[in-house]
Image 1: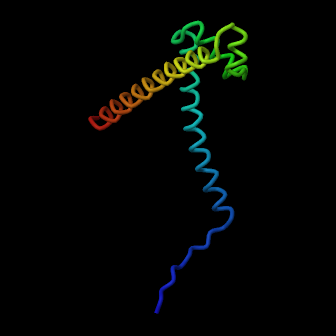
Image 2 (image 1 turned 180 degrees about the horizontal axis):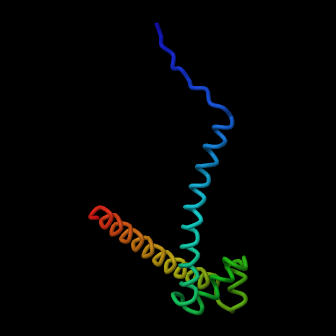
Image 3 (image 1 turned 60 degrees about the vertical axis):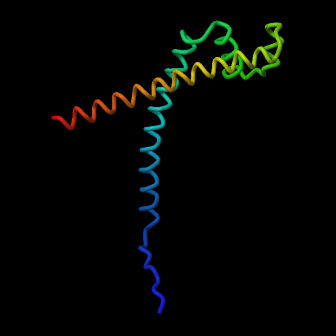
Length: 117
């Protein structure tokens, strides 16, 4: 004789509430993470990038210009623009990584402090 699993009946409202709760939790976390990333990118644009990197980055990712359009504006090769953008993105990625490391250290310290008290 084969046993069949009994499925619990769940109302549509219960499912909808559960999904909404999960979305709120994820959304709050994503918003915080997004805010931190935006702040780091802003800091990088203000002080972590060269003037040329900053200009190209803004034109490419904020204004939506292509690498060739930027190259034409500055009278340089497209590959030069691509290299500059790659370096800018690497610098921003490095800053984001450093921020994550700082957050992990802070969390570790907070956990140790809360366990000792």
